[in-house]
Amino acid sequence: MDLVVPDLGEVEEVTLLRWLKGEGEEVEVGEAVAEVEADKAVFVIESPAAGFLRGRKSPGVKVKPGEAIAQILPE
Amino acid sequence: MRKALVLRLGRVPYGPVLSLQRELHSLRRSGRVPDLLLSLEHEPVITLGRAAHEEDLVLPPEEIRQMGAEIFSVERGGQATYHGPGQLVLYPILNLKELGIGLREYVGRLEEVMIRAAGAFGVRLVRRPGYPGAWHARGKVGFIGVCVRGWVTLHGLALNVDVNPNGFQWIVPCGLPGLPVVSLSELLGRPLSVSEVEPVALRSFSEVFGLELLELSGKEVKAWLSQIG
Image 1 (cartoon, rainbow over the protein chains, first blue to last red):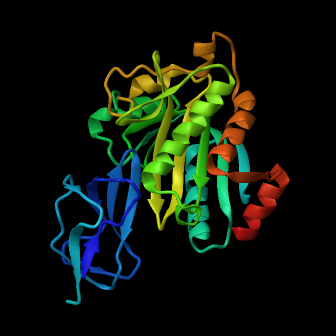
Image 2: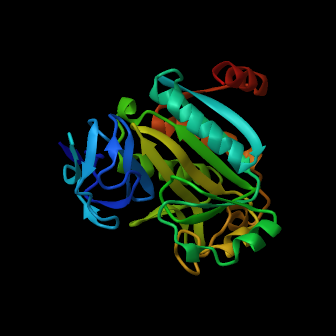
């Protein structure tokens, strides 16, 4: 399952600030995994599923709402 | 009209209010409390938002602490800022989903609260595209740094009413070297206190967010906090 930046309302682009969970680390549903920022506002992204965090994009990249920043895989 | 509770905390150190915000944020997320607004002044403190860099502290941390300010790294957006006596701070703990407000709209409304409050005293503040806050030709007057988790907000805004500007010299405010920072009192050319501005800013907040504010007395605040505590 993709870990996606949600629709934040009129926000075209956010900066991926940092990961709160490591590559390959196990995450629970609703666990905070990443922080993105737009216009002095940090938005905390929570995992939509339990699983393992894979393919994390690098902090500092610009991402659009709807775009995946990693995947949550069953193993 | 939707209702929100206002907790006026007076002058308080940063740490306990940070813990309180985080606790109230989690209670708001689980729906155990309504929308809330904390209104206060801080004891001198430097806070570093998530976009802050080490070099945003101009002086070594020990020297800043020796001058009586605490330093905290926190989960809000933005870089380094200073809070201290003479600055009105509002920390809304709102469920943006329920209010139908997006992230950008939220920041815009916080700006509007400060612009309206200053306007009531005859000071015209404006927005600067790309630089969230409330601005005057002579410098930045109002600051914003927020965090949203589970669509519930924490942190908020700070409006310079009559703040000692020295604190801003210990840092690169907002990551902008040489940024001039001013207070409403300087712009008005007369003394102005947080106690004068607070009720006006609360009224602006109520208008801008369409929330009826119910103020808890000091006694009620204590009783309420111990109940949920």
